Length: 238
Image 1 (spheres, rainbow, N blue to C red):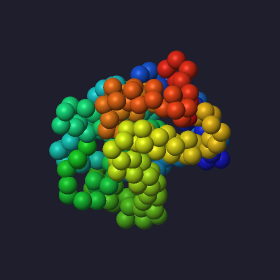
Image 2: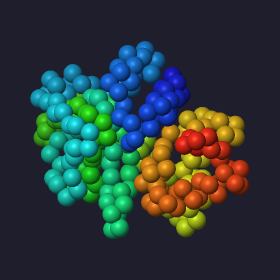
Image 3: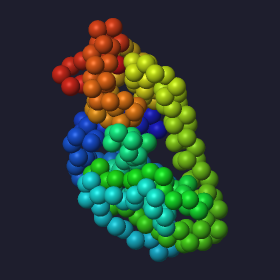
Image 4: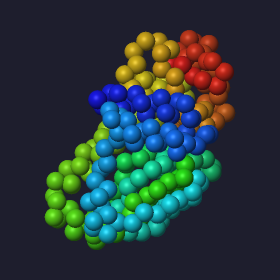
């Protein structure tokens, strides 16, 4: 069941190239209606609404929150896709993650008194469920089993971060890109050489690895010559 779901998400990402083309409402309708692939909400929407949650709409490119601001709400994506980013000193964007429908956003900040250290920006038009921080704490006291749901989600993200952060130990851009591609390929269950079509653009690979776009382009061409990847127009097969 979960393998089918992640493969479905991979096909959606591959088809729409998140960040270049917006996901259509039709795509997310398919995601919602699929009996096998329907994503699980971290916290049931009805439960959130019954405790005072509201929906706020954001347009593509709009900030949901900015670095340095105070966390006041539990945020859960009802529809759309979001990117969590930081700006590097040279102006480049670094992407920490791309949560989508059903995911919560930066939930760990609700359990300390620190300001956001990242930005959350809508990639597509989004509907975000917002529940005040104090009301979330009341809900968790009534239903402590929800803490396990949140913690499990956070643990999955941390596992992914630990795996991908290994790439930053290496200076060689080829090693960085190969590590990221290899992790994604294994995550989606692909085994054969060139069977995995990388669902990210070169710009997104640059943002995910902290490399410059020019470096990514040169390195991918080098990887093609070394027969590590195969190129078909703009698509990268690993």
